[in-house]
Length: 252
View (cartoon, one colour):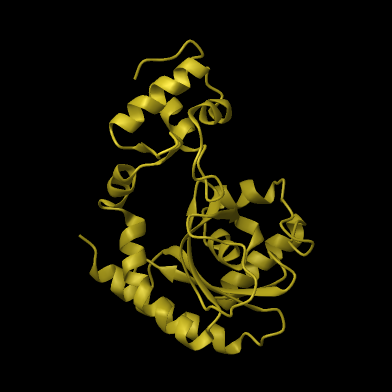
């Protein structure tokens, strides 16, 4: 791709445009996209028009812009996340039916915890995570599982900080976080009260690519703070074993 005067490729600028959208900002004007993507106004308007033309973006009746269905379609073709979600959903539904709070599936993406699915009971307690939402790896039960099973390079990079406090109880001390990660590897699960919200406890287990294979995801539930975690741990472990077998069976 040709470089811009700033040295960026066209692909890099397209990615910047798409990254201006998030779970809280789903619709924008072309001018807002340009400002957030740090692009000249004329460049932003031209790129938006071209991306609308090929279906990666769409305009509504007020000429505001949103992500297009074509982008969603392309993202699902052969997607690892789609395969994982399809394998996991029946087991997540079983956990959800028994725990009746929030059940979540997360993966590592670009050094963060990315939530790819969430099931919630109508009367479940507080939970700030959303499908396609992100949290720092050290700041949730799912993230702690993923970080414990990540590469040494990623683990050391996270431990080197900065460690953001998502809540007053998020672990931000590297030495304590290192001990917590060792405990996750030893126990095979994590119970993390207050790390995201003070009223909640996260409980998570690893999900493997196949039985006894490498860890590819974390399965978690979010419980009211004082709920004993024993039942949830058992349900999550059984579900994670089922997911590993189902995912392995879908390998091309």
